Image (cartoon, rainbow, N blue to C red):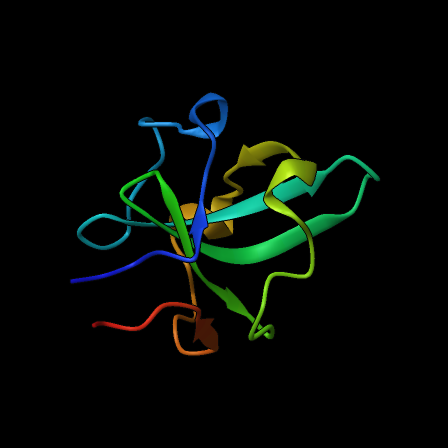
Length: 89
């Protein structure tokens, strides 16, 4: 069973994300302070499960104001530099 560390609030769940793998979508996130974070992996449009270059999220879920996909998010060139946040139990 998987316990997810980072669950998106209902208002940020977007079923229209383009998946590159079964249930997996790469996204870009903008936070309240205007920072942009790229190469974030979302599972089933509901959980942030990994991020390139970070072993913890560098922002709070409540600080997210926008989740969107760039051209690279829809067709990631590299899929090997993510740090996964969750563990199977």
